[in-house]
Amino acid sequence: MNSLLPSKDFERVLVTGAAGFIGSSLVDRLLAAGKQVVGLDNFDSYYSPVIKQRNLISAKAHAGFGFLEGDILNRDLLARLFEDHNFDVVVHLAALAGVRPSIQDPAAYFHNNVNGTMNLLECVRHHPGQRFVMASSSSVYGNLLESPFGEDCETAKPVSPYAASKKSGEVLAHCYHHLYGVPITLLRFFTVYGPRQRPEMAIAKFIHRIRNGEAITMFGDGNSARDYTYIADITAGIYSAMLRCSNYSIYNLGNSSPVSLKEMIAAVGRACASVPSVQIQDDQPGDVQLTCADITRAALELGYAPETSLDDGLRSYLRWLDAHNGSGAKEQERQQ
Ligand SMILES: NC(=O)c1ccc[n+]([C@@H]2O[C@H](COP(=O)([O-])OP(=O)(O)OC[C@H]3O[C@@H](n4cnc5c(N)ncnc54)[C@H](O)[C@@H]3O)[C@@H](O)[C@H]2O)c1
Image 1 (spheres, rainbow, N blue to C red):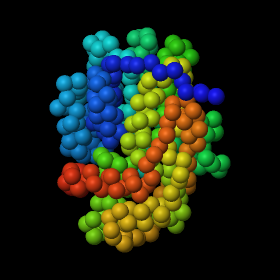
Image 2 (cartoon, helix red, strand yellow):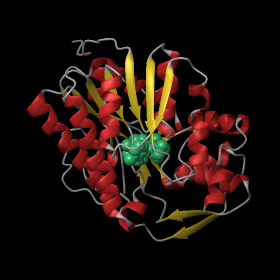
Image 3 (cartoon, protein in one colour):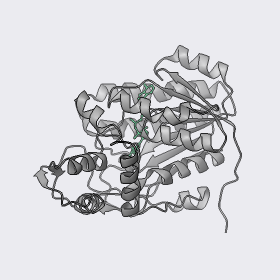
Image 4 (cartoon, rainbow, N blue to C red):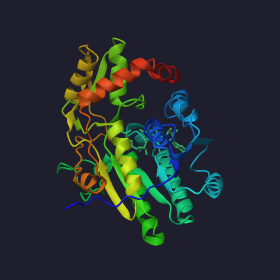
């Protein structure tokens, strides 16, 4: 039986977090498909804004792109933005990401990720018909014992403030669908990597260190595992979700093939043609032991079909880094 949801095309899109890793990659994909895109980002200093500015260079050369530097916590700015543009789809990616810093400053994470999401939902509900596609995270599954993680598994036991803020955003979104009929699709991304990856994420950091002849730090015994998912597979999934967002749905966008930390380090070493020097430290609080996406629903309803193995994805990422002069790792070091 074909369960692929009916597709409805769109023209005008708002992408929040447009200067970030996933946001800027999605913007480029939308522009290549001929869409009109407005990007919103406040160049938050979680990592170097220089890197974020650079992420937008290709989009800014495109006639279909408009950019607004601004904050999703600014309700007046959002109200004006939604009055000025008649968006067909809002893709909400802006957030403070990262598990470990959320333990240091949970209030900032809740303020940004939950109140910011509510501000956008308020705008969308006053503009009926707009579709709302939003980034959630595999972290909402916490330390779930059953694997792979299906969308209907337990998500009420997150283990970091970041994860709790993403779960709170999901809950809030449901409320807006229930009360106002806003069409909403929530996408739980599983450890995304590839060109423009955030510099503090493990793969980006490991590549940078290995190429500089520095040791890398492995937290725990190396047996924790992540379902690493290549950025082009993620943007393909988001695009398909934008076409099919009609009711209220949740999808895992992962690779469904978890790789242990030890194996990931070995794969990064192979891709860099180097044997990494590894320092071992204790597990970090807030980190989960395993993520593994069940992507059956996304495959059936969205036609989602990730096709990039970790080895292939790492090779593409390294080619991109070579063509882009190390991609901002130096700016990140200067900032720290
Ligand atoms: N990268 C991953 O592996 C991953 C995994 C699961 C979920 N996610 C989610 O995907 C989304 C994008 O993640 P990313 O990896 O691209 O992160 P990112 O940090 O590169 O991008 C987020 C962008 O949002 C912007 N932003 C933050 N707060 C804002 C605010 N108040 N107003 C306007 N802009 C703001 C930041 O400046 C940044 O450019 C996030 O919602 C994140 O929680 C990412």
